[in-house]
Length: 335
Image (cartoon, rainbow, N blue to C red; front, side, top):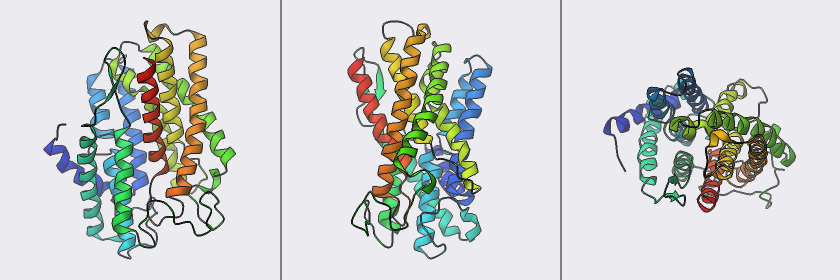
């Protein structure tokens, strides 16, 4: 584990800035930063280490890293509601700068620093590896850090209940008949699965296209699966504006990761760049199915942990870290 003191310092600003502009807006900018870096990679034929460093530093580092800016901003919202500055601690859309309370930004900054440190600590966990010893990680440490940050914020700033699960006023955890919702316009089970299948299909294809066409580029091979996640993050702009846009980043990320891992398994022993059309079709369909699974899993986790809480515990982050772990285990066993 390496701790960069400069990054730790900047993480305070990242968390505070995420709260100031609104947690969801900070997350949208994360997606933009990734796509900007990816564009730099593709513009140079994949031969641009600085573009990869930009993604690591800006999109996933102390500036817009979700475990810093998004998680810190959400903690700021929880704290602001706890202090009575705003009505709901689950409001992750409103820019908290409008409250004109620097203590809110300071709390968000501290959570940003905590997010940076804890994500580093998670790298101490032994990683999974393939049969040839290639390390593949063990989970999405950024997503897991987001979840832990949100849980800590609820324990500290929740009012009605400091429980991670619930409360369930109707006694039926999966039935939303008490006015509680996460994303009401997509919460029906069939819709959640449908959004996951369709969005998962196109971005599993997008990630597969990248890894097949840039087989020798380590940066693209390791980051291609994030393309759908980034586009999904950008679409939240419209949700912020009040349009009934689906929340799909957990679906598109898991779909793309499943598609790429499936193709890696099918082409092991050779080059992924030589994948056949049949292999790519199978990998894309596997990705689409996993997108649907992630959509359903995210909705279920929302009903258990977020929809009725008075602070935000992020269903997509929950789905991403748990299903990433499953996919990494499958890859370790199959390769």
